[in-house]
Length: 124
Image 1: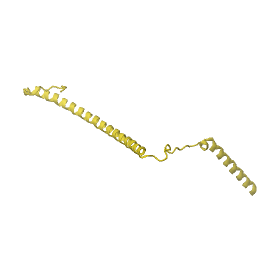
Image 2 (image 1 turned 135 degrees about the vertical axis):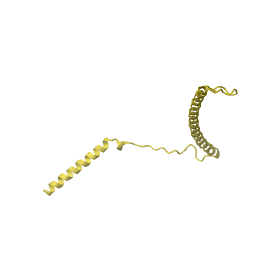
Image 3 (image 1 turned 60 degrees about the vertical axis):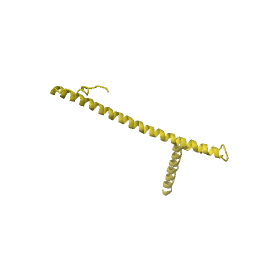
Image 4 (image 1 turned 30 degrees about the horizontal axis):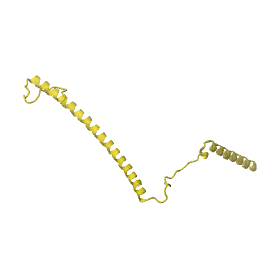
């Protein structure tokens, strides 16, 4: 009886291992090949000073251009925010001009001759 139990357990374990191997081969992960390319220049054995200087200059200019681009993006955002703020201030000043003109009319106040009469929505 004990021998039958061990045999059944061994068969179940073997079937389980075979099923695991079969399922592993279905995923395709075992068959994938990964290629790694090292970024090592092989075109020259011992680079001359000119080549090294040109490579360093190219890297420096790439870094500089990315720095300039990020700064330009930041300035653009600041300018657009300032423009929105100035537009908001302009709207508030226009509404104040209209309100002041209504108050002057209601109180029959004459405007000073040196300044133009106040009216709403005038462009400068």
